[in-house]
Image (cartoon, rainbow, N blue to C red; front, side, top):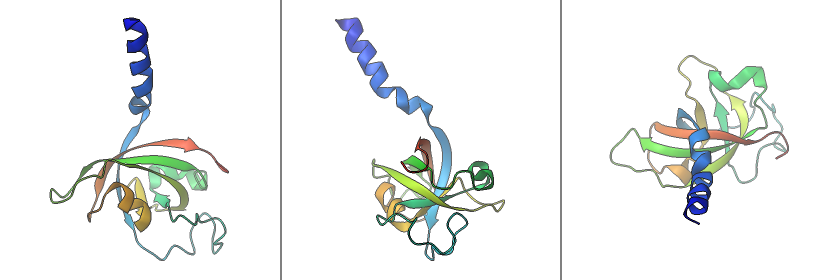
Length: 132
C-alpha cells in the first residue's frame, strides 16, 4: 500500500519536471494587427488570455494558435509576488527582436500569474496544438 501511495504521489507531480524555464513581461495593447492572424479578431480569445513568443519559440510562425500553460516562479521586483496560479494562453504574435523575452503576456493573462510590473521568471509547457 505504501508503494502504491508513493507511486501515485510521484505521478501526480511528474508534470512539474516537464516544464521549461523562461521570462515573461506584460504585452500592452494594441493587439491587432499581429503576426499570426493579421487583422482578424475572430482568432483572438474573447477571454483575452493570449501571448506573444520570442525568437526561441517562434519557429517562423509554427507556434501560432498553440496553447501554453505558464506559471510565475519569481518576480524581478521584491515588492510583488507571484499569485501561485497558472494561466493557459493562446499564441497570437511573435516578438522576434534580440531583446524579446520568452513570452509577452496580454495584460489579462499577466494579471492572473503576477500583479506587479516588470519581468518575471516562469515555467511553461505546451498543453495543446491548434484548435485545442
